[in-house]
Image 1 (cartoon, rainbow, N blue to C red):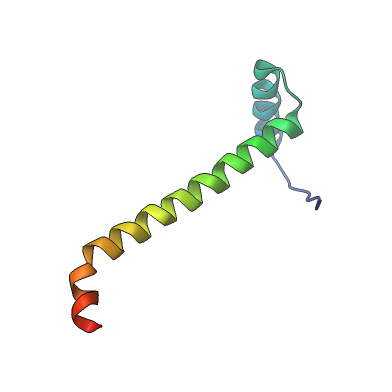
Image 2 (tube, rainbow, N blue to C red):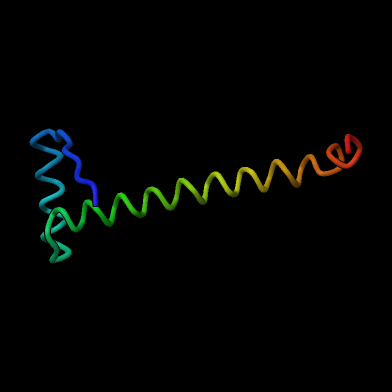
Length: 65
């Protein structure tokens, strides 16, 4: 497993601490879950965009083939 260090402002860290406390988890657990979620959303957005472009241009691709 790889570790990273990030710089957060005091206000950002306080928000993270409040959220973690509200969910009853450690700040690092909340941070990792948030990052995992963000990474998955980015992949889903790319997949959706790629599907849209391929479907929209399907006729063009058939003509070029």
